[in-house]
Length: 195
Ligand code: GTP
Ligand code: MG
Image 1 (cartoon, rainbow, N blue to C red):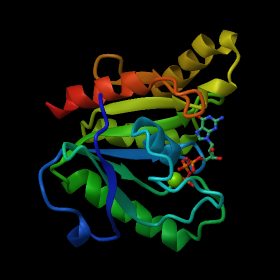
Image 2 (cartoon, rainbow, N blue to C red):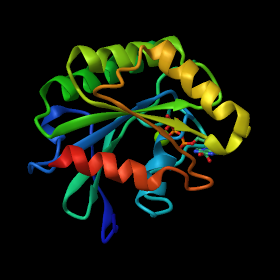
Image 3 (cartoon, helix red, strand yellow):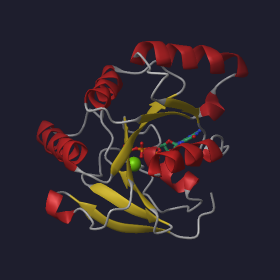
Image 4 (cartoon, helix red, strand yellow):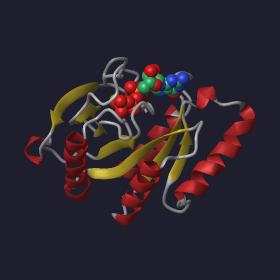
């Protein structure tokens, strides 16, 4: 997939701020620091497009990015970061839930999990949540570059077993922003869901 254009559209705290148009959208989800923003920059080959955080928990809005005037990627704040006040977590939860349940443009949830570790409870909750609403999930296992070869298969199995991974509907992609692993496969799956 050739990136001709990748640009920030807007950030939205409320439904009224969601961008107009019917381009297919793909929303990220994942713990803080798992690599959501890096993922957007890597697959669009655009360094600095999404803010890679030195301080987790700073983003409080949905951030929309236009790719080739064809589709959109939506960056979100990460969950599981202890220093975010409960009120902010609740606000974000509401914003995310409104988006997931109402947004007609949504084609899939891109759930990023750290390839090195078993998924955490909030990852399991997020996966179940998407399954409940029958939203396709692309599970992206990040920081693949930090694994030993021997652990690739082993950790994939642990992550899938813990999630109760749905092989029939969902896909699992080994990914590294550092080594650019999995980029083509990500686009293949995104484009399939656009049509
Ligand atoms: P929040 O916005 O706080 O939720 O974090 P995030 O999920 O957007 O993570 P972000 O992309 O900001 O990356 C967090 C840190 O992980 C940064 O220091 C990145 O450089 C690093 N990182 C992201 N992806 C990879 C990867 O594939 N490999 C390695 N080694 N480091 C990565
Ligand atoms: Mg981020």
